[in-house]
Image (cartoon, rainbow over all chains, first blue to last red; front, side):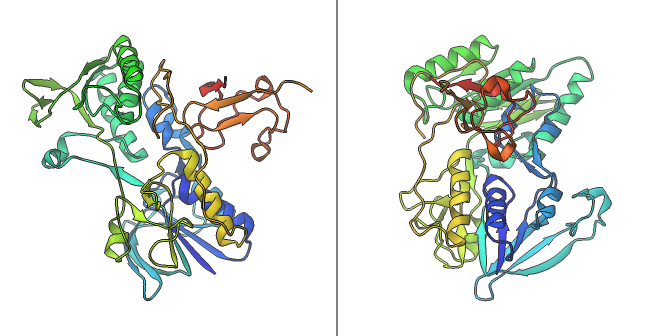
Length: 354
Length: 56
């Protein structure tokens, strides 16, 4: 059997490894746009306070997976799913098996195209940063922090200031989980941070009001300037600065948009799969096409939920591998889990709303 | 029998239970938290040992 997985985050990699452990004979190919290996997405939120993060964030180089008889095509973008022909089309400048990992400098820059046949296709592309429509025209003025590529770009930008013996002055738009974590980590690394949030309290979706107030205090004590009830209207480029427009205009060195995530459903939608907020799946993580499964951030369960935390995602991945290997008959049951904002010095009193 | 404790990763929520250890990363059942090497990292998200907190 040919198993093809799209995505090399915790969902795709955990599934691939578990399935390989259960079934020695099937072919497993993992296709990913990433080049750096399998890395820890939660650790992106520690991306500034830890000096060695660009190496320590890598949990496994792709060659480790290849040694485990999982074929990995990295730097590859899937352009279409042909459901009738049971194949996917991809495009990219990937390296083949067993080069010295995915060192893109060693690969000819010519792009290749390829089709891959599948018996079972596993969609695990995760999510991209959600950019509110009014901000989209300003794309060149801001950063996001959703991937290791994003983190490297941010760190490089920041290093430009540090090498001139100064710390950048940041604006972060969005006081949800990621915005608060990034604000906290930049402040811990010694930068000046102003956090703009549209609502009247921080992380209002996950935290009880009392904990939002506590979080506000922790962030303020760490030096973050928190502005609530802010209607950010847009941005203006001014020489070396970027300005944030609310009722007033304030200028900063760098701007980060942290307004949540958007599941990467485009490919599934093009292929005519049933889509809601995510790719709709049944309790067995099967999409509206019986040969295609989805898990992780992209999968929307029958209860309308998308499980975007490591613990339930890994649980889905292990379960799906067992299910496809014939070891599970009953559907996936969400495990009990909690989460925690990675804000330095913050401990919530009440459980998070996950 | 010792009174085993549980520790939780502050980055991803993984729980280390001393009674169960973590055989996949070479930590035998019954290994106490303080006996786990400092370079051990969370098996699920790669966070360092210092990111874990004792669970109440």
